[in-house]
Image (cartoon, rainbow, N blue to C red; front, side, top):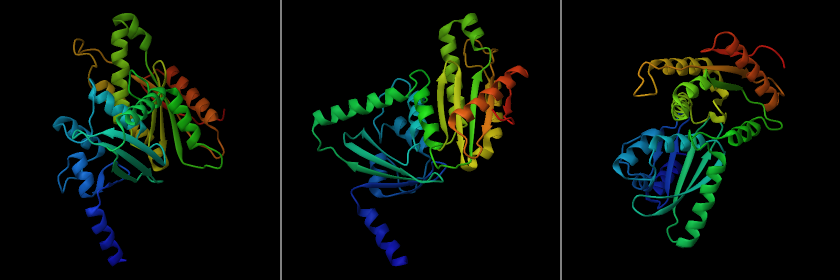
Length: 301
């Protein structure tokens, strides 16, 4: 086995394809020379994926990211990362190369990334494929917050709870408290800032394996899978505390807002619609109990 491992590592080291392994917390555990060169990393660096993207954007290395709002782009990319067992992504690197990246994610959250240079594809074919990928992303993304939209969230939840699938799961519906009053008092531009601020705070308490989306108006969905289900209360307490910490408005430092949440823990054979009904009923209870809190569903619907 040692000989096999040594030969494999030697082959990976000299491969022209980039190989990288990320753990369940999305921290880099292994990367060969080609992957490090493509993403602008030094030998010995083992950042998280978020740090890797931020470092590359600051230093203009690695993935070419054309955006006027980097944090919105990052939140959008994070919301889609690791949600499928296998997916392909085509991107341009800062050095001008066009690369195809495949992501293979296994139960438990570990991910293998393989980067292949496809610069020889014609410019016309690249443009067509980029337009296709952009249209697919737009169809599943909420433009304002960068999170997945209702379609993305519902398709993801139904896939998790598909036929013959049994998984520990917590479905959480969150609603911003008194959101209409924000729009009425300050205007819709301020309301949009609250939605973006809330999305950033919700994204901050979520992991790569979590499903996060805006499912309508001021309502959001968070789905925690496997052992992450045990972190539901901790994540919600952290979220509530972060909202109370400071104002989302630089010109209104005294302003604060809160949210309420309903939690449903999966039961054997339960459908997505049943879980959503229970989570929604628990959310209603949290609102009735005074808001700025969460309630865990205990009742059958």
